[in-house]
Amino acid sequence: MTRTITIGAAQVGPIQLADTRSMVVERLIALLREGAEAGCDLVVFPELTLTTFFPRWWVDDLAEADHFYETEMPGPDTQPLFDEARRLGVGFHLGYAELTPDGHRYNTAVLVERDGTIVGRYRKVHLPGHEDHEPWRAFQHLERYYFEAGDGFDVHGAFGGVVGMAICNDRRWPETYRVLGLQGCELALIGYNTPIHYAPDPDQDRLQGFHNGLVLQSGAYQNGMWVVGVAKAGAEEGCDLLGESSIVAPSGEVRAVTTTVGDELVVATADLDLCANFKQTLFDFERYRRPEVYGRITGQRGPAVPDHVKASLAARKRDEGDRS
Ligand code: CDT
Image (tube, rainbow, N blue to C red; front, side):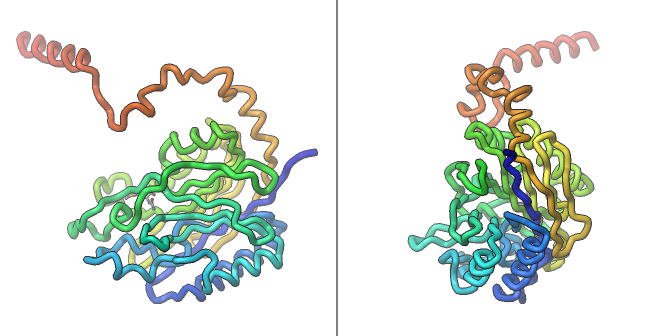
């Protein structure tokens, strides 16, 4: 018997500052219903789905931004989404800003089963951008100010398979997929808000779509897992966000992709057993991996060019200087 799951990547178009939670939740419910009509078991929403991407603004006191965070999940505004999911028998994945009762702030996602119960929670590990106000930028990317980092990548038994979560910048790091892959992950769910403009190196702006596809597809293939990447997209408060939400097979092939930067659902049926074709052949970790030579991956954070390489480069430069 095959294990198939029909997945909807529910891209959400821009959310402006003036948009209320209930306006957003209405849009999410419309996407959820569309997913139900298309036969979806699971609908995947983006990172920080419920508000505009608020880390683009500086505030002197974090408490001024408290209204962007959820203090409970579900809370009064999000309960209708949970109720509708249970009524329809469609699960979902939702990213949001979390403020815990003891005052910790995380960029979080929850995985909700078809009966409306939360089966997994993930807090973003890789926080991009900067922690201080940098007024030279056209807009800020202050995730390192607004959030604390989460402490790991877990997997969950849900939708008949092994499901993991990651959030936005996590998708650019091969370690994310590999740590999930080492737990047998068959389906990774990843919401994102990716500005087209990258202030530290604007030459990368034209490459945003290419890099998004590159990391989602290689993460899927190198770990033999389905990967669903879902954007909050479009022109949000004057900032253009990448669309190109996609569902990628364990072969690395794109099975569905959005073509707009608005609210848009694309659907693919994922055969979870297809993961084994890759996990048991080229990427048979147990047979082929060599963790004994990968120590640097967990032993150090930044690169360290070995002293003998520095010395030989310096010697070569001296020799070239002597000859010229
Ligand atoms: N939300 C998020 O993580 N966005 C980042 C932007 C990086 S530029 C500061 C991303 O990796 O897409």
